[in-house]
Length: 494
Ligand code: SF4
Image (tube, rainbow, N blue to C red; front, side, top):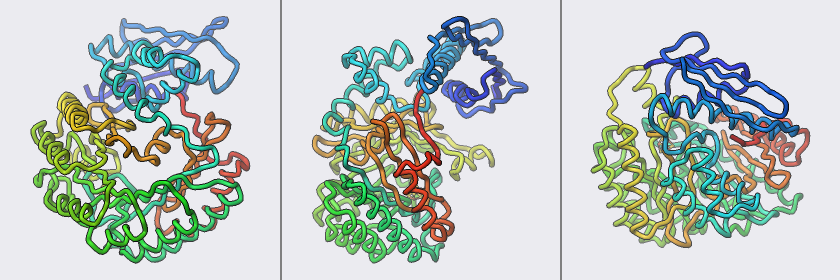
């Protein structure tokens, strides 16, 4: 099957319904004119009931919802009913159920917290995920463990915020990379960028002081922050730590082992950065070459041992399941080597081939060969990660899903007890205000006791960001001060 025809009498639901189809059929072409498989959705109302009907050939699926007057709640009910009607029809026609059921575009843990806040017991909250959204028992139990690990960490103090600093430079481009990052050797802009960042940090600090808010955690991400020079990174950190004193946690992603050396690590120690990441992604040299990482497995081990030797006691390692050419045995080897090294936390990603990545280009545009693990293979690797990491004393503490992920799976952060990263929990669960600086960074501000989240995205283009940093600071102020709700409003619901 190469294409699907989808029609609906509610245009706003079209992208949501496409997401449900892609849960079953992957990144398939969907249009309104013709297709190998056809679906027609109709929304109607009778008395106090909304009816969502989906038809495909002689199959039909119907879901209803109770009419309500709150516009936000109305949208949510209609969307859930329509998506579930389509999901049930697809499940019936194709004979399988994706692991995360009909959930798209929502953090699964949010549904648990939503049910708990309505007074449901943890068991009832979890049962709702299986009964209403067809989430598998295995995924529900994973969510249960995550909610347990987040206890006491999920809701930060009201008068706090987290700070995110984006460094959009890297040393070379990985094939799967979809981040807004530029090769540092090709850019003459790093000094000007650092100056713009510091200006944005000053402006943010001034605003936070006026609002009486204090920093809880700081996070420097990218790109690869350690791709810029030691002096440049030190200037950023010095400014940030002086302007925002007292953070309980500072993380710097030192992701690429080929950017880590004694000088950089010593500066990070001197700046009292407690948490860093050293990311193997895979411990197979052949895979690293295929995905363009430009470093070897041994480079990762060397960088990690150097960080240990220099006194880092909180190190994260990122791994990716279902990388091109990798089998379950390759992934097992990566897991075993990681566990041997014993970092405090391990983040396991399922490969997501995003449209802006070179890998997507190789696969779809150029039609190149790519033997990525199929859905079952990816599923086996993700299961293996959970079993082996939990067996070694790690516990899952946050989870997120993205589009285009191998096997429709998830990314999971595992940590040893006491090493869950506060920034990751607050940011992924959207329970913490995030003041973000840098090109492409997105400030997220929470209002009305978490019912409303406003976003202020910065420009992604580095030159434009540098040229227009004043304007971006003003835009951010307007969002944080809630003046006009001018920017993108996110009211996440399913
Ligand atoms: S290390 Fe990260 S930011 Fe750099 S190219 Fe690879 S995926 Fe992109």
